[in-house]
Amino acid sequence: MSEAAFEIALEELHAHPERWDEAVASAARGKVIALTDRGERLAAVVSADQIGLVERLQETVDVLSDTEAVMAIVESRNSIAAGESVYGSEAIRALLDHRR
Image (cartoon, one colour):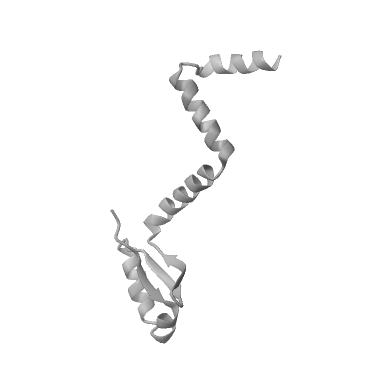
């Protein structure tokens, strides 16, 4: 499990630009560096390895925020559990028959 984010104020970075090196080095080691302004989180510095995770999490949030998509997933899972799924050429034939 990753550590909690370390917060650093933009004001601090402006006053001590060398702290950027420290922030980037910490992020490269896997720590999340939250950049704040007057106590409010504005942005974060993360390692390159974590960018993919952030993108996948955002995609998950997007799907889970879409009620219709979630309902479709639930219906699909229920159909599979009930043995109502089709595979390969059988699926293509079923689609073609349905269109006729």
